[in-house]
Image (cartoon, rainbow, N blue to C red; front, side, top):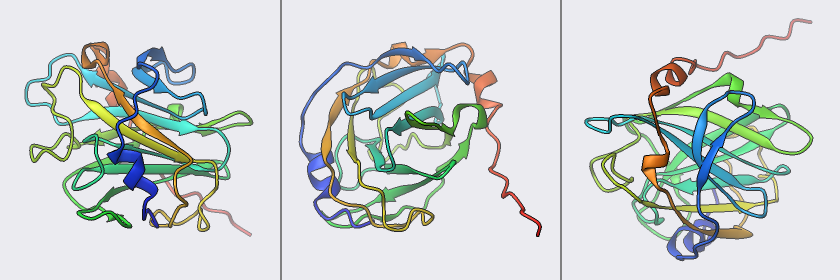
Length: 211
């Protein structure tokens, strides 16, 4: 991911915009505390009612067109857990990233995993959406927000230009065209329905096309 200066400004610059608000996805029925930028970019969080010992959350990320949308779960860029996604035809490509330097973040490996929620993942004529269970994504090493936080600031970035290698989750992307940070009220992200929504997460199954 050629994020030299792509995420540098994106996650290092503190630019506050719209305030995240509760939003229920019309297809999945999941309610998120969601930030949406005027560009069409959006990112939302859903959390369990009880934060004690929790390391999981459900996220939704998306935008318009074929470009990428990115988020920093720790607010800044350096040494924080980052996530980037973009549409590829009727599917969505995504990956975790992390870097200690202002440059191209490598794909991040760790205990954290992503599992798609199919009824909240789609690409249509107006926008694309990727909804997923982020397991063990709340880390104790300050690379992400904490489950007990009340109002963490998360960084976001996007570019309307599609990555050159849309099918490659490790593909480079162009410098962001919009970026900033948003403060999330986690009390508005918590729901007693979290475990039900979490049960909908299933590993993606590769489709076979026989001749």
